[in-house]
Image (cartoon, rainbow, N blue to C red; front, side):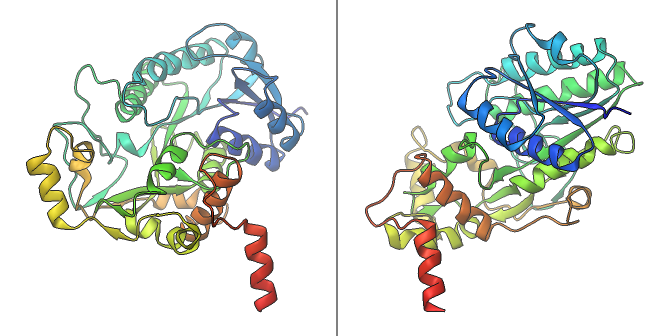
Length: 357
């Protein structure tokens, strides 16, 4: 009996590539993926890491290729969505239209089991006026507020996910669940890490950080949650799997700063003092770089992530210390973050530590 076909959209992306790898490793599926260019270096590299992977050229804003991509498909993992920190980019249009397009083709192809990647920004992390975080536990019943006409990344995930649930309400014969990750961290399979790299580049010279919590998820945990959710999608039908841990920014970067700051980097080792915040919010309100983060600052919130933890292979969510250190090495070696004059490659550090031992 032939194995069922699992289609992964955006499979050459940071998360999508790890999902393809994890799905291939299960041996349960014939894995097919969509990407803009199946002949690209990233696509070629992914095929080397995922034996048997079939790639189809598709784009979120075009119908081309989608019918062919869905031929014989039984399971869909929709991960494709733009992510970076460009404030001028319209994230909503491709996220919303792309989600509607993919779901429409899935329905036409008779797909009955669907998992969609949303974001914690639709649950408990939002930069929009009118929404304010509270110091409490957040879970799958919570939604952030999106103003009319918003085009930012956070709003795009909220709006696209609501379109998923509208589709689910209109197609009750299809089992659907959404995965809501936080900031995804960890070594990339293909040398790309989207908006996470943007954040790391900014923080590598920051020295201090805002007193706020980051919704963190390790990339391999996130990929396992997606793959294991598709196998239980009927049981998870209608659920939102909030997949992150809330960690103070300064704590996220603590171990990374210990390793890399002696090399010439300046990752955060403390929170900004109160006098700086007073100046930014009272005297520099028109040019305050932290203004958009004001709703999340100083709130000691937590996340109900028990369902997410149960869907990892280990049954728990991994930490951030070594994972972020490894990712930082990966960013530097791939050229995403410049090499400081005192930079020491990981393999030399490891050799030195073995010698000392």
